[in-house]
Length: 273
Image (cartoon, rainbow, N blue to C red; front, side, top):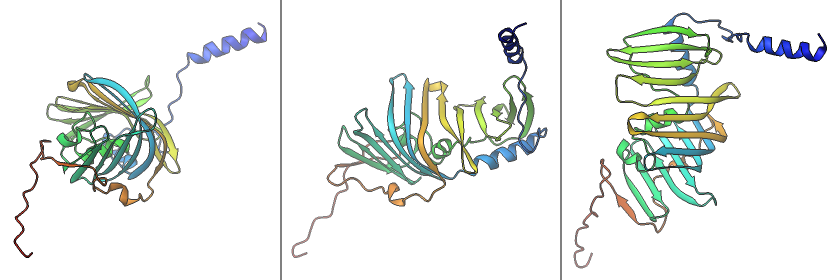
């Protein structure tokens, strides 16, 4: 057998060999509770991010993607700026977890009110509390409260399968053995959404997925986020989360359900005051 044929044979032979799973320095984990605690600890190390990315939305109302500047800090501080193809501002969302402000460039209006999921869905096609939205952007998975847990190893996908059970509701977590980060979360038995995390990158001692996908199957909607240039756990400029309206832009107050509120009636000015 000549060298070329031998090389081809070796490549074909090796391609059929299962790759060795990298369990990291701890080795394989066999206890579900231990894996859950380690996974939760690993994802909670990221507390803030800021930088550039791309947002993509797929929904019955349409599909599209835009450039974005993002700043997020736990528990509920968030700023998202969207830009069109020509880098012109489309919209800016800011929330401190309690209140929100939304500037819509096309309308030249600034909406403000309680930071309810309904109001935040004016900007993003998913109705989530700001704390939960920030967690998802930071690569964290909200866990259901579990009565029990089960653990198995999927050697084909090379991931742990950690399942949380709460009555008729279950959450299946696919966990990467090396960095102990969730790569997919699926909730069944309750109205919820699925999460997919991919392209994990190291930032010093921190690990963050640079691709985030939220799938709301009941609404036939998905929200994708891809980070292009970000920093982690740096103290952000808190003025980024200023809720004040841009100067000269009309303000629209909305209630918890997103309905416009009438202007506040000012008391009449008494003579001589």
